[in-house]
Length: 276
Image (tube, helix red, strand yellow):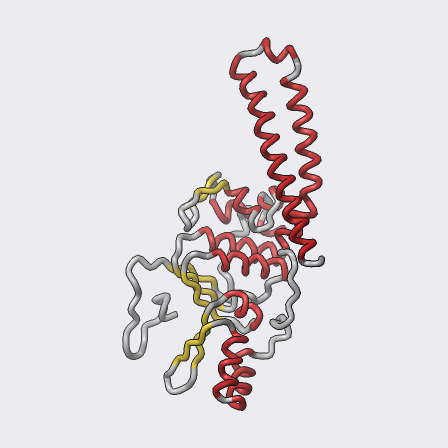
């Protein structure tokens, strides 16, 4: 709250860097507008959104990154599941311009798919990430250093995630580190084991691997129809713009089909290398 300017310090001062843009995600979650659809909650009535990284994306393509099909993106908020609502809140969060991302217990109430999506997004985030979490495995996966209150108004900074901090503490003082680690980590029944985590495809990649064969089949049908169109002598009785559009359609579908095959092959190879 001090960092966000929502509360003033009793003593001392808070100094923020110039050009700081803060995006905040709290454990109570910002309210969504239940009178609007998922896409309207992210982009209003616009077709495109300007993201914080300077890129301009079509809202439907952006929401697909957060596992929303076109049908679900156009669905009213009241029809979304809890997991979908959380993913939509993340879509709102990462659409904001920011160079400092503050997360307060971000893993609360997240399903596995949304949690994996959040970890992927945070890994790619180009700015500074500051978070508070009792999810030890999430800390191991998401952060590069840990800030720990050590009493007497002192804050210790340790390189690595939660497990790295715990190991460093044990090296300094085995008995004290064990007790402090238990207090810092909490006893949440939802925490995931950090050690021995088996490598696997992310939910997004696993889902793509399942849906790509159907997409490829659809593209092949589209290509056959487009090719038949350009092979039809009647086409060349049409205006030049119509002929050009028909031939360009073949080129576009061929490129999309080639990309789909490449993506499918890469995901299969990745899955096989993981022994799944």
